[in-house]
Image (tube, rainbow, N blue to C red):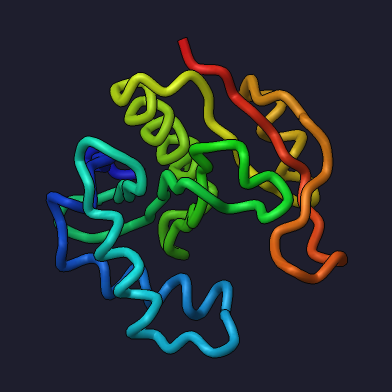
Length: 159
């Protein structure tokens, strides 16, 4: 991975919201939501001092990935917040540790906001990855209205 990779706020790169919306629309389609709707959601995450907040990974001047801190993510656990969500790394930068750096950036942002913990909903082998990085498994949750949309819910306490 290039040395020039930086984790920064989307608020400092507002022109990236459209590309992030495109990534989310392609990776996780939502019936009834147009691409413009997805991009508009990220415009609401251009906060510096509160959740929702989106961070971006920049390689030189190129958007390489993103992650968000959201108030809600896993429908069955709406009482918990904030959530690490919308983690995405563009193909050329995958398998180089950028996703881990993005999640660490989200944790740093949450600490700066004085938040005591972060939550994430993951599936498959991702649970083991996060547990190796200090996340604690809390149980199983439901992402949407479909009972089959299950994820493992994990928490990371912040110093």
